[in-house]
Image (cartoon, rainbow, N blue to C red):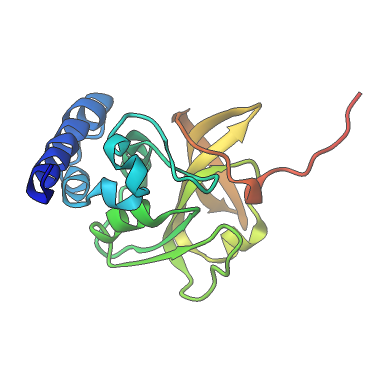
Length: 196
C-alpha cells in the first residue's frame, strides 16, 4: 500500500468514526467534530496499532497505557463546552491526542503528566483529565481558576462515570453525568483501607 492509499484509508476511517461513533452518541457540536476531523488519530498510537486507531474502544499503546476511545474524548469535550478564550490543562498519560483536540478549540493548552507539576501556567479555566480518578488531590483545585471546570472520569464502586468538577466553598465538587469508558489513572487512586 502506498502512503497516499494509506492516508486515504485513514481519512475514510476518521470520517466513519465521526459519523458512526460520535454523531450517533450525541457528540454533534460542529466545532468539536471539526477538531476530530482535523487530527490524525493514527499518529498518536504505535505503528503496530495504526490499523485499529479508529476502532470504538481503547487502543493499547504498548507501555501499559491506552488511548481512550474517541467517544470518551468527545463526551469530555461536549461536557467541557470549551471556548476560544479557555486556558486548558490536559492531565494525562498519554494525553497528547486529547491535547491536540483541545488545541483546536481553546486559546492555550498545556499537557502534563498525572504526577507532574501543574502550576507552571496556572490558573486554568478548564482542566481535562485523560483518565479516571478516584480522588482529586488538593493541588488540582489550587490550579483551577475561579469559575473553572474539571472534566474527568470519576470512579465510584468500580464504575467510571464522566464527571464535571467545580470549586464549591474552596473544595472541588463533582457532578456525575454518565457512564463512560475511562482507563483508571493510578496516580489518582484512593488509599486502600482494610475492612472486615
